[in-house]
Length: 441
Image (tube, rainbow, N blue to C red; front, side, top):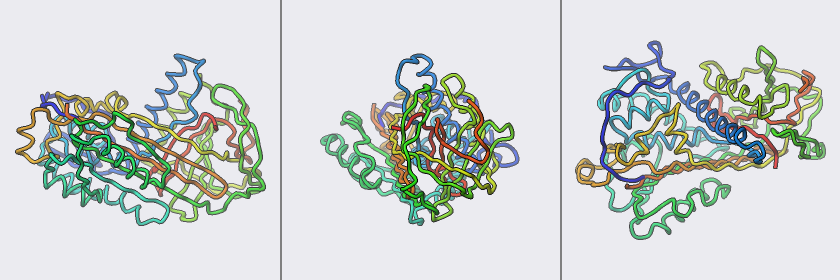
């Protein structure tokens, strides 16, 4: 994060939120959400949709450019990192972050007292429930605050992040040794993603003006409940978004019972494959017809609508397929989410503005008042790696928040993923990873 003094403005217009009179706590001037599962899914849906729309627009602007193989994120990793940041935000910065995270309904503002009550009563318990996932063998979640030695964290903030996110504080010397500190943070991320993510923070991502980096790392290793037979893996054609054909390794099963679903218009279909720990599953979602640059926007809109539904995500029923074919792949996606979160529908403009940001809740009051250049968000770096093979899925994601100073329908008996598709890796109804794959490398 970076520093400059806060110039608060009034009159925030409420963004879309999942909150309404039936599911929210009434505050003096508005509504703040209690149903955080739905808020999280809504945020995840908006984020993946925004990123996919950006990629589509880039392709429409330059159709000769190569299509990115995939857009993938861990909404869980990003939400935890934003949650740690939001917990120390105040005034307009806080209101915008609450609205951007789909936690605040139609309100201009809520008082700091009301926020602190909600933070303890609802938000803390919800994040602790998410962190409870670390008890599962398949997944590990780690949070850490890397703080410059000159910074004095407020006791309330340090205690809250420790109790809620199980986050420890690592003293750093950004002012005098920022490059070594960058390497130290990257090493921590690499270790906590089982060496799948290296060098998340690039050279220049941490400087002598950095005073804090909030880091989150998630690693998932899931074994299929029923593995694919390697002997049945064959080279088959995958039709890319730009109508090219590629030979890829396709894992196959025949005469198999699966959890299957499709929409009422029969435009999209999906299969849910459980892991040995059946609280975890992976969904593969494909359109009946091939996707192209011209029609993929409809898929993105439909996907956002499904993910943000208050009902069960992608309901399924038992179905026997004559053939199930899933591509074998390992894909990687690295993003800077700063501009996405600044823009609609998130509108977290103050957090990234050196003049307007207010994170006074992070530091001791005396320090906040004396800083000439109070902190703001410089960047939110996120990297996601997902590998799928015959045995199961390996996935990792990391998020670092740097705070600085200043064609024809297929048979219903077959499910063949041989064209662009979306996927979710879920723990029950919590979206741990999600993405859209345009091409297999």
